Image (cartoon, rainbow, N blue to C red):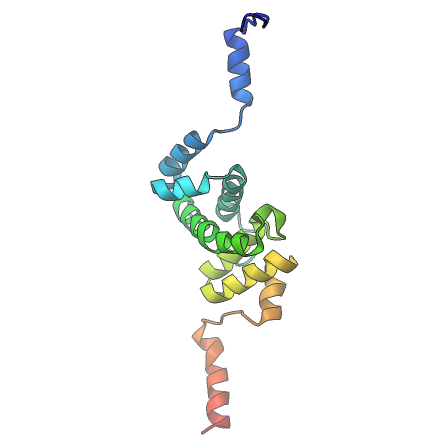
Amino acid sequence: DPDLVRVCVSPEQIARIGLSLPELPEARRKRYQEVYALNESDAFAITSSRALAGIFDSVVDDLMGAPKAPLAQPVMAQTAAKLSVNWLTVEIARLENEAQCEILESRLSARLLADVIRWTEADQLSSTGAKQVVAALWIEGGEVAPTVERLGLRQVSDPSALEPVVREVLQAHP
């Protein structure tokens, strides 16, 4: 446009501005495929929103982090990524559609989602129970352990813990 003043931008300015930009979706997709071995459709789904990709990164980092509680065992990167993608693209997407709001507008944080995933991976919570806990956290907020206890969803898988209960039931109902 002849009315605009000529602007000269040095290569250093371009480089500095480039470094200040957030990771672009295509670069992020490529990183997810290389680092986490996500398939193309999962990587695309997660990078469809900058907010969703940020939550994905937070959940994966939390799952891979140092243990914070007895159930918090570190998870391998690819496993953490796949679990996170499954939750975010299925259950969280369903909740977003039902509530017509994004996860950032709910009371469910990346840390809470990571905790729910840990509970299911430790066989302390069934997948059905985990969905109920996530829905409750989405609406009410709170923490995972009290929500699991309040809803009575703790799963007991230890045979030695189940044996006395089975004996008691059999004695009461011969």
